[in-house]
Image (cartoon, rainbow, N blue to C red; front, side, top):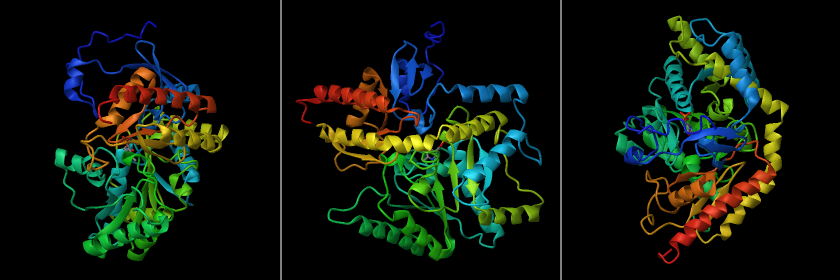
Length: 458
Ligand SMILES: Cc1ncc(COP(=O)(O)O)c(C=O)c1O
């Protein structure tokens, strides 16, 4: 491959990578990916890896979808850029907004585009404050989210995310944020019903404590990826939504990971049988081939924005690359592919195989438990002695999960290590045979770690 070793002589003196050990970057060449084929990515030495987590839970259609490439090229040729703002737009954005509204899980949806998941979430909270201001409730500002959640990397989203380690280490102000427990599992002997009652009651008490007139919204991912695919107990969202309704608190969902088929329905909200007032989405929206995200809102919520716009003569919010025509064309094509190839049905058909394969890992000596929902899940490893008593959503990635991730580089599989877990969420186009390949490689990685740790007090 002529381009395979491009950059081989770079010394990495200038590059900073997020979620990376910065000093290691100065001394050790990072994994350099140069190509992709379906669910596989290929590094500069020609080795392939099963991308078992769709990179950042986003490459829903794999890494070589020609129709998405063609859609981008076509749009680049027709009109490579024009902003959608100031009462101007381009046809592809108009069409995408309509298609997104049709795909939304509630009628008459309104759609505002942004570039990343973080930005969509940020916009959603900004819109909320704006809407409340013009609805005569400017004091309703506080947002309830969960410890262990992740909503993005901007200052506001780091604050709303539940990583207390992140709040501390970046000195993030968390005014207007209220963090409640996220579902990590019922107490011994507690039923799912009793557990979801307890969590909903915690939300009620948090609202009461903050002062009901100061709380604006509850915001959650249908499945908390950052907590190791934490699946809510039965009735959880319905009960919390009821509490929100009692206090006039908005119910928002972050569908950045769960949107676009991951849970076996188009939206996570549909899988959990609850309808949000508004939600955000990104990632799978364009198969991650281009950066685009959206805030999808109910007509009722939108009307408060229009009220503000009436007062001011405009809605003073935009971004140069919001609804960029090239990502919009790719997102539109993604929606077409989802329909044409029935991607959601394909996911549903794989679930029995996926579930069985995830569950089968429980027999491995390193494994404490596994979780799964939709085409995703997590393997939680037995804690090492230094992790015992620690928080599962601590900032540090260490212990067995990190070792399994690193062994995966040898075994040809990329996973996402998060504290005690590795998370799995492969491209939705994966086949039954490829699921077999994924778990074979993962088990090989786990066996390598087991062999290495045997006799070291595991
Ligand atoms: C649930 C969730 N929300 C929001 C985000 C932020 O999206 P982005 O990285 O596109 O800003 C992420 C990213 O992983 C996420 O997992």
